[in-house]
Structure formats: structure tokens, C-alpha cells
Amino acid sequence: MAKKTYDLLFKLLLIGDSGVGKTCILFRFSDDAFTTTFISTIGIDFKIKTVELGGKKIKLQIWDTAGQERFHTITTSYYRGAMGIMLVYDITNEKSFENIVKWLRNIDEHANEDVEKMILGNKCDMSDKRTVSKERGETIAREHGIRFMETSAKANINIERAFSELAGAILEKTAGREPGDPADRVYVDRRQQPSTTKSCCN
Amino acid sequence: MPDCNKNFESEIKEGKNLRNVKCKYCSSLILTPSTGTFTSFEFNLPLMKQSKVNDSNPDTENVSLFWAVNEMYTFQNVGFSNTVGDNKYLTCADCEAGPIGFHDIPSKKSYVALSRVQHV
Ligand SMILES: Nc1nc2c(ncn2[C@@H]2O[C@H](COP(=O)(O)OP(=O)(O)OP(=O)(O)O)[C@@H](O)[C@H]2O)c(=O)[nH]1
Ligand SMILES: [Mg+2]
Image (cartoon, rainbow over all chains, first blue to last red; front, top):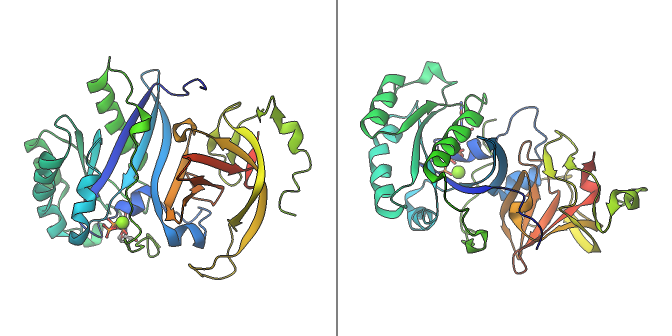
């Protein structure tokens, strides 16, 4: 076997209501990006990114999930093995913020007990349409002892930072442990899922 | 000919990639040296630029030179598309340019097309 090219592997998940911008966070349609119709039509399942933190080479495997109610059974099957979860709401959508509590309960039920969580208030570029103040986001995060950040997938604000902070938090927690066996990866068939990426951030 | 990578042989050292494999468009690092194994076979890979939006029947080209990667975590940065048949297509993780290759689900192997990336 070839030598391992990394020290640790962290599986991260994006969850939250439909339309909050999870897919855009993973699959940014920035104007300067070379975006092809073919890839945007089929959509991205997950990404592998390598970051260096605390002198360690860390592989992040980042998964997108569907926010729609009818996909929840599939979504919860992704919780298994996730070491970090980004819980996303939309600062212009009150309902998506209220549902944070519901998503947190969902995580408690289905994810690993020691999963590291982070709340993201996305679409912070849309200040004119804001209905959820930053303070409310900070408050709910504090109440649950979770990290918080406002992001914009469209303007590329805090996206990289959010991932490296979440990874850093997992690193602190896992310090000393062995990397997980990458062979345990299971494919979940999501062919039924409609492609939602087309209108993304344009 | 899409594979008219005239000097591709000079990119191979002991059957592996001599240099870094990067995205042609944004230089995102995909593979570090010696992590891909040179392999040659024919595969119809959808074009990076499609002439029209046509989900079910994309324009393809025959590609035959690949870096084979046995284990997906060998990649430095890469995106995996949703499943199409037995495959997932590979993209740049930073600018989403793609397909730069494909992943074969039954064998769990990934193949990066030499002609869709740069070697630096
Ligand atoms: N202004 C602005 N719009 C955004 C941002 N992120 C996403 N959007 C828009 O919000 C809409 C929904 O984004 P998606 O990424 O598809 O949402 P999702 O969370 O993946 O939704 P589901 O897949 O249904 O769960 C799209 O029209 C995006 O263009 C952002 O940061 N700012
Ligand atoms: Mg989505």
C-alpha cells in the first residue's frame, strides 16, 4: 500500500432548511469560477479538501444534504460517522432560524454524541432583507454551547474560515486518537434527489 | 485529438506522476507527486464545455490517458459529483471546473484525465 498522505480525516456535514444555501456553501458559483453546465446539472455530492492545522495534514470530506422534509430519512443516514456538522440558516428567513432548534434535536437523536457543531447564519450579503439579527444567532449558539458565524456563499465571506474553525475544534477533541478507517465509507444513493444547484448564487 | 499531450511521457516517473497535478483554471492542488499511477484505456468523458444544456446526453470526447488513484483520500483537493450510472465525476474543489476525470464506484478507483489538468 502507498503511504498515507494525511494525518487525520474529518467527515463534515451541511444541514439546515431547504433554500438556506448549503449547496452554495459547498459548490460556490462565484463569477470568476469556471463553472460548467454539465457539473452544475448533476450536482456535487461531496468534496475532499486538505488543510493544515496545528502541524497536521487534515483531510476534510464535506457532504451536502437536502433540506426538504421528504429527504429527511436519507439525510439522517448521513449523520452516522459525521464528526462535524454545519447547521445553516438564512438570515433573511425567520422560519429557517426557528428550525435550528429542530435540527439540533435531530442531531442529538441521530449523530455521534461527541459530534462538533457550528451554526452558520448564511446570506449575510443581503443586509437589506435581513430578518434575523446577528445577536439572535449568537444567543442561540451560546445557549447551546456551539460556535457561530455569519457567512455568505455568494460573496465568499467566512466560508473557508468556518470550515477551518470547525476542523480545528474537532482536532482539539480528537487529539491523540487514531485516524478513522477510510474503508468504512458507504455510498448512499441519492439519484432521486432533484438538482437544486442550477439557480445557485447567480 | 484530446490526448495530444505531446510530452506526457516526460510526466511519468516509475509509472507515477512526476509533478504536482493542478487545476488548469485556478491552480488548486489535486495530486502531489507520485500519488497517481499512469494508466491507459478508453473512456468517454463529458466535455468541460457543453454546447447546450442537455442533461441526459452530454457532449463527450474519448480520453485515454489517466492518473489512477486507488484511495479517494489520496487527493489533496477534489470534488465528487452525484452518481451517474456506476460513476461519479471528478471536479476541481475550488472552482468546480470539470469533469477532470471520474470515479468508478464498483472498484472505488478514481481516474484523472491528463488532458484535463496541468502538471507543474
Ligand atoms: N444572496 C445570497 N443568496 C444565496 C446565498 N447562498 C445561497 N443563496 C441562494 O439561495 C438559494 C438556495 O440555495 P441552495 O444552496 O440551493 O440551498 P440549499 O440549502 O442547498 O437547499 P436544499 O438543497 O433544498 O436543502 C439559491 O437561489 C442561492 O442562489 C448567499 O450567501 N447569499
Ligand atoms: Mg442543496
